[in-house]
Image (cartoon, rainbow, N blue to C red; front, side):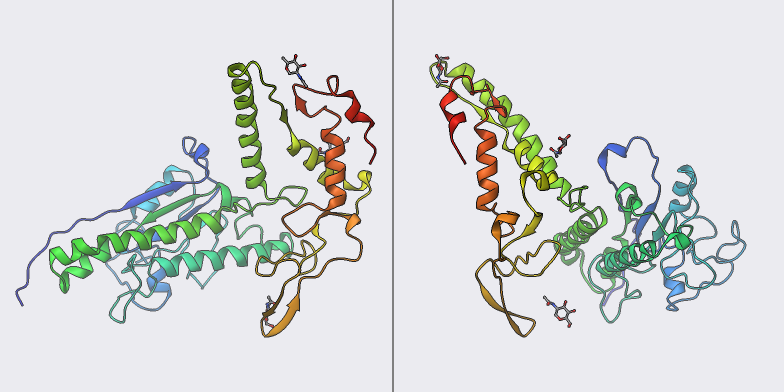
Length: 357
Ligand SMILES: *[C@@H]1O[C@H](CO)[C@@H](O)[C@H](O)[C@H]1NC(C)=O
Ligand SMILES: *[C@@H]1O[C@H](CO)[C@@H](O)[C@H](O)[C@H]1NC(C)=O
Ligand SMILES: *[C@@H]1O[C@H](CO)[C@@H](O)[C@H](O)[C@H]1NC(C)=O
């Protein structure tokens, strides 16, 4: 085999600002970083896989400091610029690592593609993402125990407001040149990117809580989307009305009726605003997407049935997806007041108000 010298300089620095609206301000409460030696602040060393001795670190830290550099890394300068302290490595286990302002999962030698038996670092991108998920879960556990840990771990909302940085990919290419041709390496790029995309999606999905619940226990994102759609739907009905003068087009805001019902359920004679009457799993939702109302299935080796509650009129929600008859009756009565319509129709259909429920 001929040996070639490659002068390779690959830097994939991708920063994902979450949420996007904050990107211009650079006021991030915390930073979560993923990568390889370009941004490793002590993981590979902390894991005991490699050791880094002098003269590493000589120009700044005066000790090797777990970095593959004579001093500071790009990430250190970026943290400085954001007026944040240097990131502790996830695997720093001696002393009191402080993760209040974030955590670094980057480890020297890591690849985007899964590690193999010959990889320098077992902490490939997917593993770093798993470490992050574990980190987050553990932090939330500690925060739930009281204020004792506040100084050492990020606040819950830092996961949503934080900056996520990714600087990885060099080893996927550089490492491959030992055993593959340029053509083979170029052909592997789509796989590398698929793996990268999967990791990013996992961080985004679990890191930022799209399933964040509002004060009613409802998924905020879903309701936000519903409101936006309704806003545009309302505008569309106006536009259509303009175009079809001989038709009557009425927009009914059922969202407002339903959210009022869920928020103020007891006023309308209900006892359960969000728990399904017919389902499996018990409180708070009594809903399990694997087993729908009326079904019997073997879960975890036991046969279980999603049964109905004893009095469905106490429930707003019937089966986890659909409203109960009692709720539908209330919602209809509200639609028929005409107050939630544009244009309002009560004046034009007075007979409807006499309907009895
Ligand atoms: C429908 O629209 C027409 C024209 O604007 C109006 O005269 C009529 O009263 C409307 N009918 C109902 C049922 O609202
Ligand atoms: C619940 O009722 C209160 C008092 O009438 C009202 O201000 C509030 O908007 C209602 N909640 C919702 C989500 O509609
Ligand atoms: C299955 O069993 C495990 C271990 O007992 C338990 O942790 C898990 O919650 C169970 N899952 C379901 C769906 O009941």
